[in-house]
Image (cartoon, rainbow, N blue to C red; front, side, top):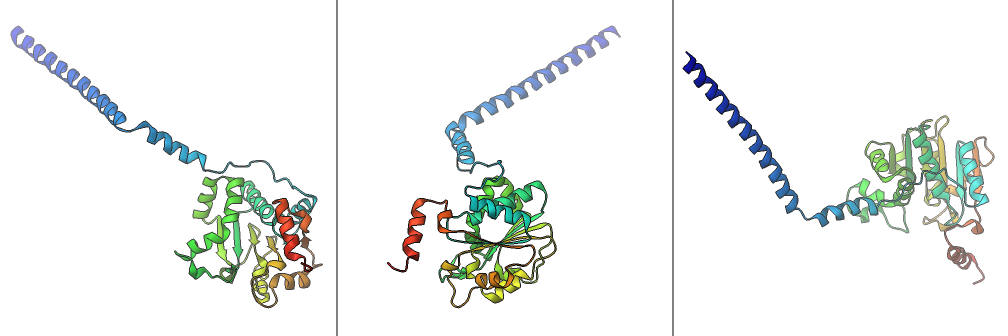
Length: 271
């Protein structure tokens, strides 16, 4: 009886020893596999990927929007205090930047749920059909300037998320027909000098209660024939409650001194 129990204890101890060595061996095999795998991957690829992920992303500007000129400050105040604001004036005065930055602030703070950016599909006589891809891909070229503004104010990751989930929408003006802009929406119509009076009427009648709408443009750079909807709307709506028309001058340009000189030469009829 004692011999039998002794044999069982020897067998049990040998099994435990084999299990123990097997466990240690598998652990060592895993560690050696990890070392081989790590050694097989060049470290410079990892470093390059990390640089690509960080170096080319615009830095987020978390500071509140500050006006660069008195004219910009009046324009910012007008957008904040009115339902409909027209920003009229030459290139480089900050019309698009101020509107985009204020829309980003409103979305980030939760005051609105959606930003809609629209413009007529007109660029120096060309049409969307000349660009490759689907309609969304074609029109994205037209709102790249606003994408840069939103990336700066919200961060690239936030902007991409909002674009995927419909929190930021870019669409041609023709796609606004039938929509209603409610109080949770900030709408920007850019390049409004290329809108016809009929298109402008369609757009303006989309505005719902307490909606925030900004219409920007420069009548001197219209690419359409005949009357444009921007001038027509300003004449018809000026003086209405909750509507403000802000006009920038050439000296309000903040893009560069050269832009002001270029505008002087192009708009001086004596030359």
